[in-house]
Structure formats: C-alpha cells, structure tokens
Length: 292
Image (spheres, rainbow, N blue to C red):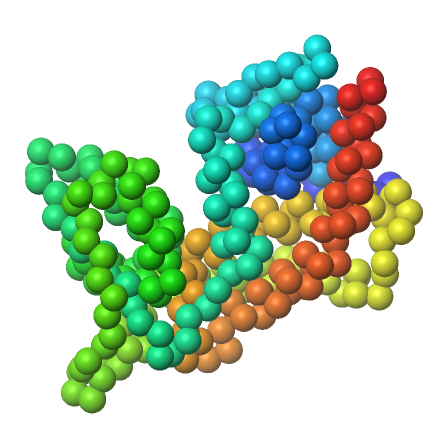
C-alpha cells in the first residue's frame, strides 16, 4: 500500500479539500495539456490522494457550477479545462506561490486609498476583497497598506474588479517612528499576525515529517514517484494560500521566531525535492488515462 493510501481518508463527498486538490492539479498540470485534463486522469490522480471517483466527480461538478472548470472533449473523451480568464490568473499566481518575496525594513510601503459612493457599496466590497486576497492590511476602512512591490499586482486586481477609478495608490514611508508607535506595533494592529502564525505552524507541523522522510531518499521507482506526488500535491494545496495571506512583511516587524521563515524554507526544500518526481507520476497517469 502506498504512503498516500495510508495517510488520506477516502470520502465520496465534494469537500472543500477535494475541490482545493483539484484546483492544485489544474494549476500544476492542466496548462501543459492544452489547458484540459481528462476525467479519467483526474479520477486516477485524485485516487492516488485517497479520493474515490464519486468524490472527484462531485468536486468537479461544484467547480463547474462556480465557473472554475468548463467541459471539453479531448480525443473524444470527456475532459475539463480552467474557466475563461482563469489561466491568466494562474500564471500570475505562479510567482507569488513558488517565489514569494519579502520586503526589507527600508523599503517603501504602498497605500491604497478609496472612497466609493453608498449607491455602489457592492463595489466597495469588491475592492476590499481584492486587497484582502493580496494580503493588504487595513489602516482604516478606506486606507489599506502593503509592501510597495505589490503595486502592479494590486493595480491588476483592482482593475479586474472594475474599480480603478475609485482607488488611488501612494508610495510612503513612516515618519513618526521617533514619537509615535513603532512600525512593529502598527504592523501588529493592521494584520492578524497571530492567525497567520498559527497557519504557518500548522503547515510546518503537517509537513516536517514529510521533509524528514524525503531528506535521504531520492524518489526513483514508480511507487516512490506516486508517493512523492501525493506528498507534493497535498503540501502545495496547503501552502498556496499562505503567500497571499502574508504579503511579505519585513522580518524585523514580525514576532520573534516567526514560523513564516521556517515554513518558506520547508516549502522550498520539498518543492525542489518532489516537484519533478510528482510530475513524472502525473504524466504517466494521464498518458494511461488517454490511452484508456
């Protein structure tokens, strides 16, 4: 029995985790197969993660209803691809997920100021949602802050929300460090660092043993590739939201022994170790599915 089969409970439900794993698969492999993955391949790959075919089809159905996936045919076989416009968003996310940046203490801040008429309160919500997804902290309801290197990404997201005319961006530095609260105190008030730290701790606790297991083992056999695939996809699924919740705040403004640094090192190590073998397993499984 594989490591994946021992680790993951099987479930036929369309659980959020099933849907998240499915999105991870499309992010990793879907764009390299003309944007589409066959249903048989999805069933096979998610089966390697301990999910039964009923759970796969239910998760696909939920994502289809949300517009995340679209039905297509590949060689006459049923398949799914990412919904319209999502492939571009996935490409933009690659850098954030796989190469997260961290600001230095002397770098400028980016301020996003907006004021939306009450008659367009829904647009106000969309602006806040877009900034929240990028990891901005809220100074006031209409003034948000993040490291300045996020400017291009922020402008893109605000533009997608149709709100470019309501948001103004400024680059700034803190000028009251001698007489006012410290920047470290302000950062703690603008971001929920305790919640973020707990997520990093959970990530490290969940995947430290995985790192130790593969530290002295080079995946070589088909079974080891399958186990590497299971570990890698599960790890990436938990990791990929963290770089969006953490905008890359300077370490000097964060609590002592911040687990974000440890988590990022662990992710980088596992990515370098497992991404290749995981891909070999996925390509083999997809080829078999297409042949079927």
